[in-house]
Figure 1 (cartoon, helix red, strand yellow):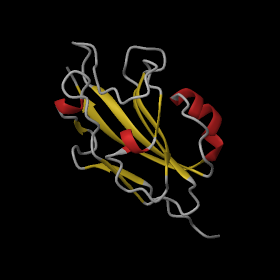
Figure 2 (cartoon, rainbow, N blue to C red):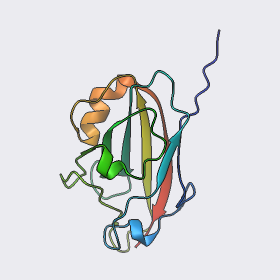
Figure 3 (tube, rainbow, N blue to C red):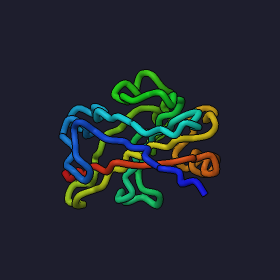
Figure 4 (cartoon, rainbow, N blue to C red):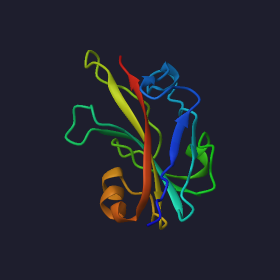
Length: 151
């Protein structure tokens, strides 16, 4: 039986895994998207999707900060994702990146930048919940990098 090596990777030149996100990436202090890159995309991937989510937010399903669809499997630099691909809704219902803004005194929050390799194209720009419900069976491989931020 052949073994498949899973090596889809997402990383950032601006923070280490479980490292502090810079103020410039937060909603109140610049709201700039962190520089992200992806490698090790499975050969059978048809499309990539990127989701930034804060499960620590005091909401029933956490807080989704960013959903990105239509990323070609050949993409490596995701720094321009906000302008080059389909942006879906964040938890506020806006189709833009909304940087971290945890409630004051709430402690550190973890921000998961998930990359998904899919065997099909994503229709439209679904919410995080709709994407996971509709495309769970189409995810070939996934990975994440996690940043930390506290007010």
